[in-house]
Image (tube, rainbow, N blue to C red; front, side, top):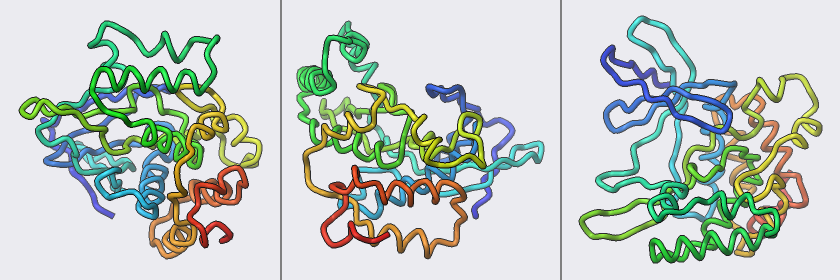
Length: 268
């Protein structure tokens, strides 16, 4: 496992999630993130392995690797790292996209008179108006992926767009920041308790607290090669800990069966 040394003058960036702050650094062309509430690094690495075993193009997701973070005083932490995917493009979260157009996603996502699909359709209509992008299927697929990994942190600042100021074009950023998934928050999901109980406590974002209702938005083709994924997990030399147990449990959930490519969905 790689050890990444954090220079004494490196700027610690505090990344805010729905559950608190997490320290991260940009070292060269890498982003380095420190575990804050449990095993976010293991969950992040395993989540990206799921996507590596999917039909998505490699440019559509960020690959995370485990690492040891060593501070300048010698203190060490577990974490993960990834390449910086932004290049010269400007990052604009879904929330900031709305704010830049004098609006807020909250008027849609918190509107109790709207169904989940109505919220989704209104959000996507606004995104198309602001950027020209039609990304309904990609965002619905993202929510389906979140249901598989039980990602509880897909708030509107974790859906990202990239703007090219030179070409004046927009694109949907690759899938990133999946650390608060697979019950990685050991403060809220204590080790030793039955997974069946803990999984029922996880709430989805941003349109509905129910993963099932957000999952229903995805009507596209199956995209996860379950057989390839299980083989990759078993052959990995990295210890995924409880994250592995949670994912294998999810792979057996019949509600998720339509996400698995034909011929691979029967593998346990």
